[in-house]
Length: 424
Ligand code: UGA
Image (cartoon, rainbow, N blue to C red; front, side):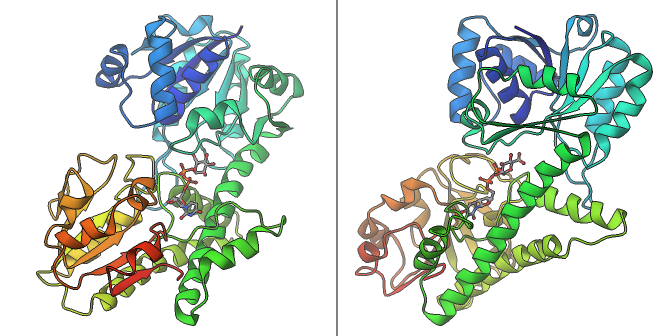
């Protein structure tokens, strides 16, 4: 059992704290946000993450969680200090390290000699080496242990990972960090600090690239009469391509792909090089959102001004309430700018302060009187809704556009003449 501090109790930090506690370590979570700590002390977490919610509740009820709102007087006792604070995109597109720097500056004087500071936050390539050089005088060690957690499946991804990556300058440090995962299955990679950081960026950027390609292919399929579902199936049977991340959509979003692709392409430029493929993926992603908006507007065939449009799905993907960098919000904004009245429903997004968007409590209410329906996340709930009930509520001859290819076209097409889906 190791003594671990987790600094920053957001999505990554809370998952790390709960999962390490579940694995039998003694973990203390620290966050300077008093309101968040208050909520956590009541056994609640501030966002939707089903597996984490369940595990957090169980651990909380058995009094296994130790959560503090200050570093003072406690840090000396920890062997490992995991930095899990956020690294959002700055206005220039680079990852903003203000929270990581503040956390390291604050904990630095309080750490035990020989403690290991582990960077789990996604930090620009080169950051861990820089911190290591700053901390060497104090005999404090640094490791990079990037997270590969997807929103919606974070605990499952932590406890059953595709791989565990630990970067450090010396093997002993890396092995000590890796030993924390002794009871976790999955491949292990021990490498240098810059390699560990790069693996995280390369993986996210490559997946984003794959999706940008899929979305362009889906657009071509719409034009040629081919089916993206068949194309994806055909591609997926080639083991070199694999069967994941082949679903077309309105573009990739969330708090990770947009900021990590942007940071990686800027890192390359800082080193006097270019990542043209990543730059193209970013540009293609913007074009995908615009293309979907334009395809939908022309399908509708009438002026958007004053039109009532229903949207199903606002989050950046299904099973999350996260709307950061969500293509659905981008497209809703484009519609509103053209004068459309936008009413939306999302299974998990229940509060949103966007003046141009009216939120409804259920999907059918959102359709009431609407001239068109646009589906923008792949929530399973949408595929189960009775198309006739939708038709009864909508204006005559409505347009339906399924931006995630999730509804059953055979069941819907008898009721709607003007029905289209991405890639079909
Ligand atoms: C992503 C990575 O998948 C994780 O491995 C990584 O740890 C995480 O970022 C991070 O850096 O922390 P996440 O942002 O939660 O996870 O979301 P994904 O499930 O990867 O989806 C990203 C975007 O791609 C979403 O907008 C989603 O709708 C879209 N997507 C995904 C598709 O359009 N089609 C697909 O087939 C798959």
